[in-house]
Length: 282
Ligand code: SAH
Image (cartoon, rainbow, N blue to C red; front, top):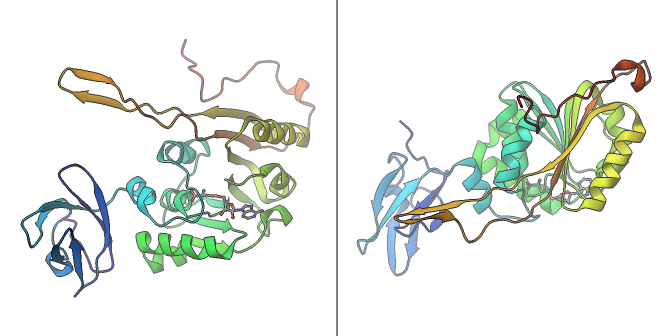
């Protein structure tokens, strides 16, 4: 059974589905529209329970999912949306125990998903050029994961990744910054053979530049680019239709595999490998 503890961030959800984030603090009071509730009335209660304010208004107290948490946490930089966050661990093939270089940390949304995916034996090393963003991201991550787990799994480097990567033999490099092509020379020496490079970019000219840089480097294979469109639906009585609103564009994801090729590409294979974005069964 999951019960709420002091220090934890929860979501209070009203009957309209509106979310009010709340950091539980023993002894404190939360006020809403002239009504109030003691945090102590929520601490120790089970996740998903209904709680009552002084005037009788009811709210559901829920532990936010990681996607909900990232959408409502304090932001410095623009975060990646859940639709992209969901795909990155699969397309970068992030596995328990992996060592990942990430840049920049931004508000820490992607970092949280990566930390969850690498598990207790994995490591995320995050480069961030702005110290204010680095501090905020660290607070966001510690609030969700706790200080001990964060310290065990995350190494934050307040450095410019365009100038170099200190680590070697890492499993994955995952970038959400404007000029990932500037990282490619460093990625070549930092990534282990078979390792994966992934970057997220909002515009086509940026994607063209990074793909060209990956090709020219000659040590990357399976270079692929895709975008995600997630269309929510309205299911309500006879109104069963796509929602009127959706996130029309966020960005493109490009992936590539670091290889050690000792032959020219033409001699290796003449067949085309289907990408994981294609349906290979038909
Ligand atoms: N993925 C993050 C958002 C990243 S926004 C999230 O989900 O929260 C891009 C970040 O890259 C910003 O914080 C910016 O300061 C950082 N950045 C830009 N150029 C950088 C560089 N050369 N080295 C390190 N960080 C950089």
